[in-house]
Image (tube, rainbow, N blue to C red; front, top):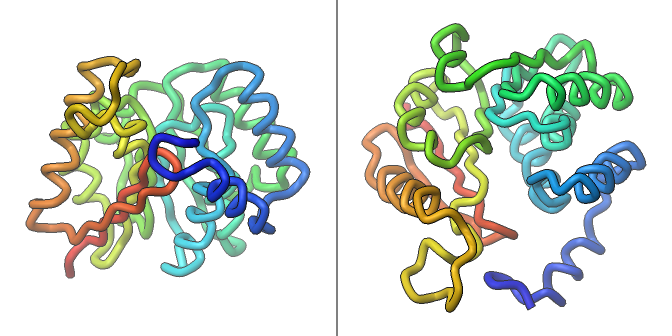
Length: 216
């Protein structure tokens, strides 16, 4: 049984997911074998649906890893659309570029290598959708800049906001997450809920996904 959603329900939802493909499945297996923190396929499907729903033409992702979530996002782009995705580790960025090519999305993706906290000053908005899945301790410091980069009614999606339940004091008997990261996510969630420029809801899917719309 999962900490947030019972395992049988998660398996049921996974069985309904028809949006994955052979390339995504292969990348997910490689990520699991390497112990990389990739999103789950159900979160990936949510990203694809959200990007399609807002008619995303320009998107930004923080935390490329090997391109798995980026493929889910970029797969919603029409010809001429672009996903900018930031990755701190050069080797992961190289693998991501290769995976974008395998998925036929090389012309719709640009991988930016470097510290996202610094790189954000070098990108220009507006973006239709931003996906935040990078360093948890940077979630809050980056927030206002990400909001500024969104278009009105644009969507900020953040992963890991429930953090295996550890954001709830006493819910987990033996916490395993970095306490500094847990505190950072708690503070981020508080700010999301009160941010004057955002309207936010949190979906308890997998490790928790927050959906924040920029107020017009």
